[in-house]
Length: 205
Image 1: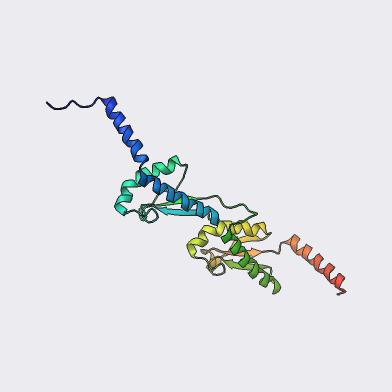
Image 2 (image 1 turned 180 degrees about the vertical axis):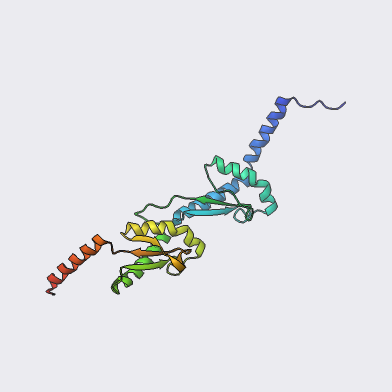
């Protein structure tokens, strides 16, 4: 005779077992581990966002990525990750936003940008100018994607040095390019007084 169907309670218990087994599966944990590593590196570099592609970064075939996607999202949610949903053009790519570093100690890439910025602004000041245009790609020698990840941290770091930071208009409007000004009214007046005092000490006019 045919075996009797399992009672509903037992069937539900078996489904619960499968859920637990799926979420505990090694491939899901390996993906989550790789995501966490990329998250930590992005934080260390001062990035304001990073992306994770389930296939490319997770090193799994596209077909396998499609099968693992639901489990991966549940695992991310249980680990308190929040993300921007993948688009149709990139169905396995997730975007994560990060808190911008607050300083005063800045990540290495931000420090490098600040060194380049200060060198360029110093030259402009020596030529009698009150502002400097700084392009994170051309002057900071960054790839465009890397520049987009660092632009918020760069702006905050520059402002922490007393600079007024504005996005460059016109041809530079769509680029990670900024006008940095150090000549506010109060600072100009104080600079004039300091200059007069310095001349007096040197015996100048």
